[in-house]
Length: 272
Image 1 (cartoon, rainbow, N blue to C red):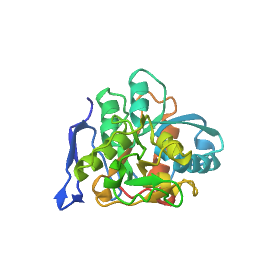
Image 2 (image 1 turned 90 degrees about the horizontal axis):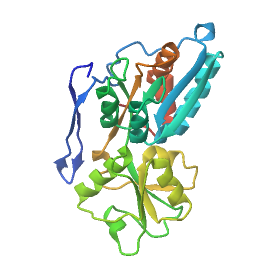
Image 3 (image 1 turned 60 degrees about the horizontal axis):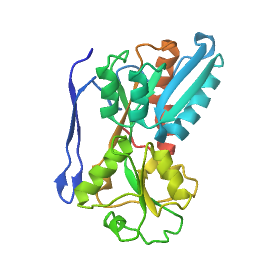
Image 4 (image 1 turned 180 degrees about the vertical axis):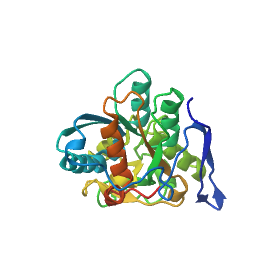
């Protein structure tokens, strides 16, 4: 790996205890208070051109679509192509040689996989956080209020697969609450969980707060005790093999800028 080891500690109280997650082996990360470069936004006009390929966690779709539109308005000679999927799926594709200019993951662990393969052009930056909500149909017909309710007999619950960031967070929250359940399905990204619950194919699912914010009334989010204890931090990094590194750096800077933070906040994300 081409960057020093750095630990990331995530703290939160769950029934009076602290969850501490230490991730080692990833490139240094910077948060909102200590950006590694100016965050005044990207250059505009004729300075940038060509195609920009972004691989991003599925939960970022609505926010990054808006930012991509803004970026193209600032840089009319650039066309942004976005691919959204589970972070672990995207990381596997990158390690196997998939092309891309910029990668945004829903957790640090997945970014570490890409960093350990020497695929990053520099240290990642943390740009957002997300917490979990119980997603239910409007009106909450099954009366679900707590994580323990998800284990009720006959209740159909869908989760992300454990290797996906939203699945890892869901299992951490369930384990901390002492809740054991067998999901009816385990999806490869959080958007699929949203779809299953919204379609009535499951009674509930564990998704991100940002998914509820973007559901436009098709889902209701239940905030449960201990939800703030499991926080996913989102890193973004330019890829070493980027075909358009200048545009990738500019988009990253837009994400890190006050404008980017405002857009992310409007879509339900927290500050890093």
